[in-house]
Image (cartoon, rainbow, N blue to C red):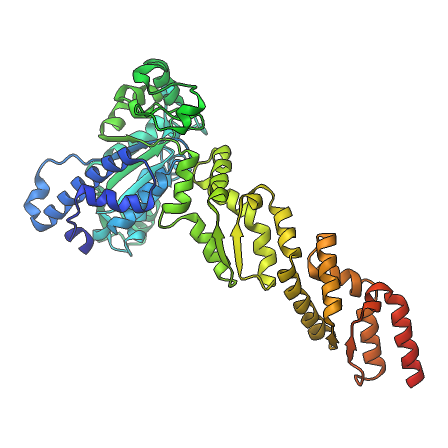
Length: 476
């Protein structure tokens, strides 16, 4: 509540905050900054002067349209985090007409109470975010889903989008409470200052607008242009070949109605903004400029193992290009990075590696690059020592390996393109050398537990172990 009482931010300040986390989408950030400041400044003034609450006030409820993965949800979450207000999110497809099968429209408002730490007073200044609203479209632009009526679900939102009281208990809870005599004093949440934000991809509507305005309208929507246009910024804002064509920023009220949203529903959402698809350059900037970049997450993952992760520009640009091909927006960055770095996460924590540089070659061939790294002399040398220590710990024998034998093992790592532990296993475990040492230790009741691994054990392990056995028999 104090966050609302202290709210004094200007639209430019809100946008500056969003710029730290959200790359590009400047027009959308400006629209949202104004809407947020208008709403929460009014809420603050009403708290300071309760007499203002009775004045007519049209909430700047927001509708965000844009392709999947373009950052709609992230943008809304960032705004809620900045404001420090309760935040509740739900997918429109989870709602039913009655709330018996799915959720009721009022249920998402009740979620604000949990987000507000149980305070219904604080919850009434929260933000409700409904995603995939295009999935509850009806009529010519929508599709019937699961036998329920999308227009009825929209209607259920009408009364709570403006100013109504929502009980903190749903209908079933209220009935049970009344049945057992506990219905007195039930709390409600006023939605007068709850800001509702809806979003959806509206793919069908995008095509309708495209047909209405034409692909040559205002020179903004050329389907194809040459490489020079792609490499140089165009004063008219022509999209690059890789950028999905979007006409949603030209959407009018009639377009949303034709797409299947009820006129009454659209009328209660005066602020509408379109988010454009992300290009590979946008995704590269997300990796390198956003304060909570997903790259930082991977760097922290490796830091937990004492490994410093760095990345070359060419590597990150290739990651961004591959992410565009996934067609899931910024989410694809996690998919690509996880695919590239998964093997390194598994292998490197068990090596002496303290620094890893992500290169374009690694992005193109993760498995090959990992093998090259594991076979490199510094990593292989440390892996040999770790292997010897592991054998001593598990087999209760002490081992010494001269430098010339270690060098031989490292050469074999490069030759076979195998990690040192795999090479040593093939040389000394699978040939019976280690089990032979264990047998000698047991036969001498632990008196002989120190062994030197020589070149002969690498070249002719069976013959060498036979010599050890004969020497042991002679001692007996």
